[in-house]
Length: 299
Figure (spheres, rainbow, N blue to C red):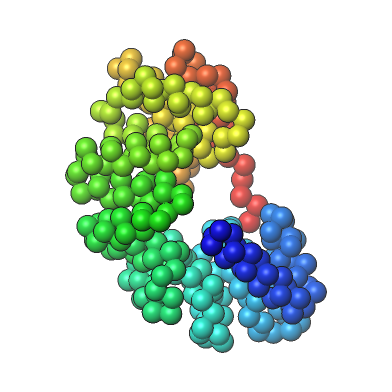
């Protein structure tokens, strides 16, 4: 009930804020929320050219930049917003997130400290604070902070996953496995948890886990990202079982690389096509091929 009341209060505050904004900013905000980034950016840039510095317009343009991974512009915009409104906590939170994405962990921690000084019990700020310790390589401290957040967490899967990643980095493999399993149990079909287990390479899934993975991969309610991770995990398991090199390694690297990848994609796609065994469904192979060839970013 407390969570519902908090959400209702936040929604009411957002409505009140929108009523005070110029129509152009409201329309651009709606376009942004609908995923129409190009139209939102065009409108908000035109507004800023005409009206100069406007805090909400600048923040919205920064959020568009974050969505498009134009992080340097987003950082500069949010710095300008905070110069004008240093107590704007939502903007400072987004600024810290950008700093983390740009691997500026010490500066991000400074922002997290400022946010926590104002609202020490805010779970988002506390999670952000823990993330800065991960970035700084202080995993023991990060684990302590994540474990503190587990108490009272309505959705603990992401926290479990973060703890597991830090445990893995520290070489505490068995503890990491236990946390990855806990993350998967907390959120059925949590692809990242299963992929992380598969990525341990020597880990062997139990029959029960394989059944859960296949069921989640086939479920219509499974998100695209979770399905990709489930497929990668199933492919790796299948290839490991047959003592063959996993095509998912090549595909995953190609998907997340900035280097020219045409040759790699051809090889990985051929390997994926060849792995349509009983362990991997045709839809799973299709999902991996789609992941290997994502649509171009329109920016």
